[in-house]
Length: 611
Image (tube, rainbow, N blue to C red; front, side, top):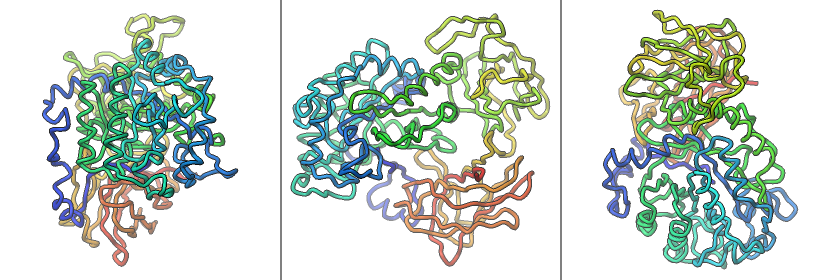
């Protein structure tokens, strides 16, 4: 994995350069290579249907890098596990020795797939080849593979494909199409360090290794539903066009936005983060680790809690995205115990609440102070699933601004005294009235109030169901603090001051752009229930470092915003700590610091309570 993202939002300073190469949204000249270039919206909807319904998948990063497990020459290498060869500048000959120790005799594909299924995951994406170039399958295009170069001598992808087919789990392959640090000619972030072993023609590498291997993984493993590219270092249109036609080997396959060469793919892929407003109009998938690494590191024990993982899943679904949650197996072929424990716990929650995740779409509410919402729309009306993270102490759940007629309300959990339920494809079937805990509700001028039990049915997230008549009609309330005390401020919600600064939309996202005049500024209004100090981050993009001033009343924060690598490369930038002195309606202003200002694009700000 790599933290670089492929986005295409540019400030005017970069606009002329962009136009000289053709706009980012324009169809590349070789679009005929893309089997979906002429796809109709209806065809696309049909192709993406299973993926949109799935919402939850397992990412697996597994390879030779699990042998050193983060340590080289007796020293811990400060990087994610699968990047150890690059970050440690390990010579090719030395790194290849690890394959001789890679013998995952405890690997059991059926156990892996059963774990994913028990967690409520609907698809698996596994690294068929990562940046170290080691193929986790029997490849004729390179002997640097698990069958020929390791004592294991088996093709684990064959076994995984068979297990997925048996259990009804969709299978996808990750493939590093550009970076390859062991097959001559492959690209390397930061350049080659073992030039004698690595230098060569990248065109020849694509032609003789990458394209043939992609053909192999799309030909020899049955139905493949996803092809997940990564880090398009040195990729151009011509190189991408050697690969893209191979998708026709798997009709209907979904591919992501990381191929390169101007091809935007089917899905956006925010990494290790959840975008504030999702990607309206684009399919997207957050990929995320359970600890701090993708590939196994023996000493990384910084595990996310089950609560965090579940809140992430719900948050992502509430914004119309999918959650691709990673496991990094050991060199023996075992998924680490903490990952197994958390996945089983998530699965228990999904047994009851799965229908509030699967086949749902984004929330109609801009913000909810107690949690999140997902929805399902049918010809007869709409079902709103209210995911309550912060249970109301007074027994009254406020649903602000909802104007629809409520038909019924109930808890998505068996009623008191019911000890058994019928399991369905999407979890426990609570459609039987006898299994519902029906709730009273009252509609008023400010929305709907639902009477709920004194105690939350689930300590992490309880689901209140509202069935309403028609499509949601909502008077959006003022932005407010979230259930955890944080505040998310989208660029599209800002009030802009100036004639040039404006909100622009690109790559499925709104951002504040065209901000070239340091006299212009923006501000947000929101409601604070709990005042205090907040750590501020910005989802932003900039070619040059710049200084900004944030202010709430008399409290000010002068922040240094680092360069992100360009106006289309968004990163989460730490700005510092700002105090909000009192509760109530609050205005936060964002000004350039004139003497140290360079244009920036801002998608969102986030204020999190400071520890």
